[in-house]
Image (tube, rainbow, N blue to C red):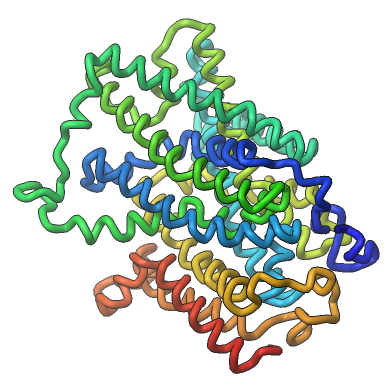
Length: 487
């Protein structure tokens, strides 16, 4: 298939060019392993904590997580179709709707979000190394904090050490990533189930959290307020994988068939997210009985074991888990996205390095310091941007183009997807129209403007940010494309 793309095209390089049929080796098992590997991670384990902290009981929290992932599975499968059919990555797919140069807009927006996630996951991996090292060398736990950073020097070194491992895997390329995911998937599921069994055995059951009533039940402190909390929480759960729902072609381009990508994703994503979040809730509940305090972080739980062999294995497993999730979810996509900006100069490896550097500069330890801010500012906030992009891509590919793309023209500066100097005003307008309604609610949420100064309607839209943005952009794009088919 590479023969349809001119090797001298300014819009192509070896990483962005279509994957030929002989290069597509991922079957249902590999796609499922991809999602099991990415879902079985520390953030998923801790995901229900914010929901339970907000008043949900364990079943409401796990059901919200499952439902959010079931919803996001739909655009995930739809956007994956073009990747499998044509062998193209996300930024090239965007050229059909946004223009060959306009694709830089969704590519950069998606890449910057992924850089934030990369930083968060790297911080979590480095934190796991630091906490377990402190068991063997207690003096490390009390290291002085660097005032300008808010973390200690040893924490920074552990963070940078884990960052370096991530960059090494990126350098080794996509095949090493697939191998890493296939190793990690069964290992982390087994570790989670062993931890669940241990918690049940030691606590004589799963503890008080699983019998704790919802704060929204009649007679409870937040009676009657369930839907007010549930809807933005559901949006946040969708936002958890909203980035991957866009750049899933970066992986589905390696799938052997559409059946493989559909089955692999359906089997790997919703159930794993629900199972691993339940493990987090159940084990955390048991820690209240076993240790006399509630421990949400699995690293904190594992550091309570004193057997050196257990600690070393735990450190290895947690670091492998975080590494595999981080590379697959937060490096592959933005590496390709940055390559889209200058395909002849930026390769996958250089794009991965750019992602890593931005991940350091954002100081991710500050991003995850506040659990409520993590869901309602970070997850919901960026879903307001990514929802419209997903709506535009699906409207263009499935409704407007009936799943047919001019593959050579996706790599040509002058062609079907040039529009206005390489940019599609129709797509840009639809993107802005989809994102703007959520902007007042976002500004109120980060305290830039007074929430009391906004009509309740505008505040409410922010709770539905992903849904509102997706729907508005989807409909407006098709209307404008019908009126201005060449713009």
